[in-house]
Length: 137
Image 1 (cartoon, rainbow, N blue to C red):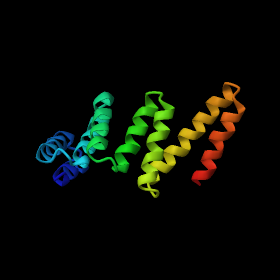
Image 2: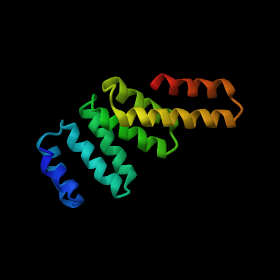
Image 3: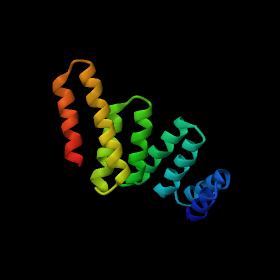
């Protein structure tokens, strides 16, 4: 179970939290939450490559893990992959339409995509991106 790790994480003890998450993944490699939570710790530690790998593993073993899709989207966005970022947020929302993080992040990604398109003179793409924001409200 990941719950002891969750408690350690809440207490600010990422080392112990990570040990529990690893144990949970060893006991059940199909526990998407164990992989996802390892990604959270790695992200807090600034290891974004491993963070991304943990979210990808969580999605591989549990394809309907909305939070893993959402966080993978954030990591992709930080790496400059706006299309991948948006695809992840859209997938998270298709699984969990009420996911507030995915919804907010998707709106932000569409906004930034629209601004970039506008700055590049692609007005039609800019409008399409801004329209997607309105669809999310």
